[in-house]
Amino acid sequence: MPEIVAGLHAVTIHIRDAARSRGFYRDVLGLKELLFDERANRVVFALPGTSTLLTMHVQGPNEGGREPGTVSGLVFRCADPAAACQEIARRGGTVTVEPTVVESAIGSFVRAAIADPDGNEFLLSNRTD
Image (cartoon, rainbow, N blue to C red; front, side, top):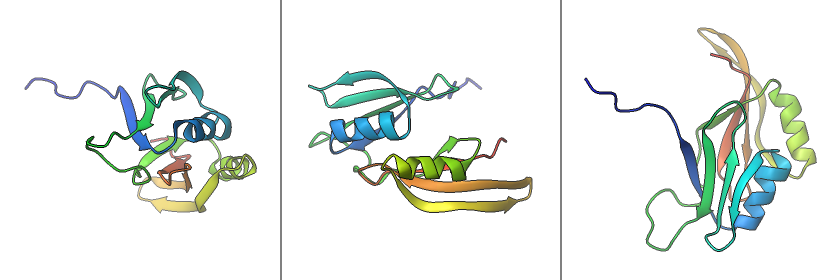
């Protein structure tokens, strides 16, 4: 059977305001900005520890996909979600679910949730497997 998925190149989300989102991902989360195209309302960031890109742009009038503020389920790995949430809040970010210990069949880990300025929600987790 031929390989269908060979890896993950990028995660793209729709936003309402490129400048506001740019500040959040760069200044609050501390991601490295690779590209800002003001005319196209597009921003691209590097995700640490991977070659996968986080891209975002203002959704066009007839463009399909999820509306801004409806993305969820993406998980960012971090060593200490509680400390990360404190720092995110200090930098002006929004913590939507406080850090919680999750018990699973393979052990426990800490998980929290944060939101960007549009309400797109991301998980922070110290789970390593």
